Image (cartoon, rainbow, N blue to C red; front, top):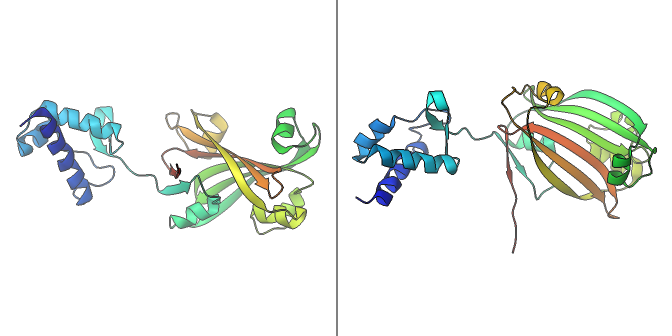
Length: 237
């Protein structure tokens, strides 16, 4: 048997174990020697097959504990749709909750002004929330809106949806959004809020929401543990 065919045989063997639920998420794979004897291949071929599946993010290397089936994130967020965090949580079968961390009205910095198309020093509304699933932290959200479009009181009197509250106060609909994705290392305050350890990476979504007049209305920073959320973006040619 050629080396290529042997590696394919090992990869397919492991994939079959996963697809047939003989290996579950987080479960450790049999040793290289066990697989080699089972398939009558070299341990070097097993090692190469495992390296390939690690690259493809099917399994992961836990160093001291060996290789195991990669646990899929429980939440799915489509980047090409305007889906709320609450809806993302509900779609995964969890109860969505909110812990309010801060309500404030403050002068816009030069950065705020450029993002929200307001003047330096204009009043903006700042809302900080922790979105939870079955009571467990999932996403830290910081939202900034020009005060003329939404006040703290206006939001507190709403049903909890910032987009609905903006429409009620300003009369404008949020029609689309631009999203930037950034990988973030340990960030003391945010990581603590999300119960993330020193070794857990975060994903940051920077989202600018626009109304029907193409005006930026809402700027959001959404932090989440990268182990909790998977993303999908459909692109057309």
